[in-house]
Picture 1 (tube, one colour):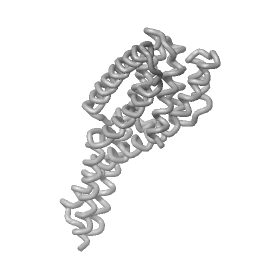
Picture 2 (cartoon, rainbow, N blue to C red):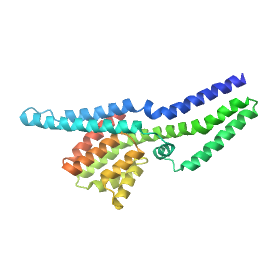
Picture 3 (cartoon, one colour):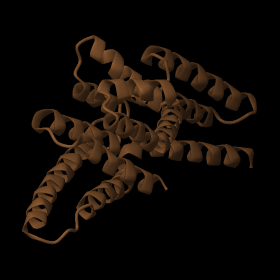
Picture 4 (cartoon, rainbow, N blue to C red):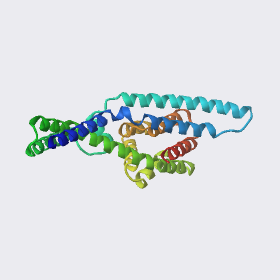
Length: 256
């Protein structure tokens, strides 16, 4: 009975390892698609006035919305295909830990788990399997769990950050100053992520490039959209506050 219980535990651990390994491909796609659709619907409904001018404006907005949707889909597809390495998992989970230290901790955990299984009288192959699961499976599963939780917290605070940005722009503040307010007032992980963008400007990194770096640490459709909106505005102009207001409403609806 003891060995059957251990085998059951190992099977559950292996299942956790597979979930952690395949997590980027098994989750997030439907939620991201719903969030993108919500944001697009908000933009599509914002102008319903009749007349030729309104129809021309609607056609222009519809064309721009389709371009944004296509760009978002391409970026999300690239992110899903990208191999989620341990270094990427560490960065996206927010842990200040090197890959080398993680491997050392994983080896220690696997050895301790294998010795513990041997101590209670299990067969050597059961202990070996448990050690391999402890070495390769559980650390990755743990990082995937931290990554998902950090993204959920980010999404819950992200609409407030965009609202601060919109209010700042309407009050006449530069976009960089609005981001400084976000970095100071919004708790982690949103505040520190925008602080990275602000600090990057001091090193000569443009805001849209800073958002691209944020996307590497926080691969979400909302961050994609923010980067695209800022990049389009910097090249072609337009009402950035209005576009960001639509993004905020879409994020709030999706998170609610």
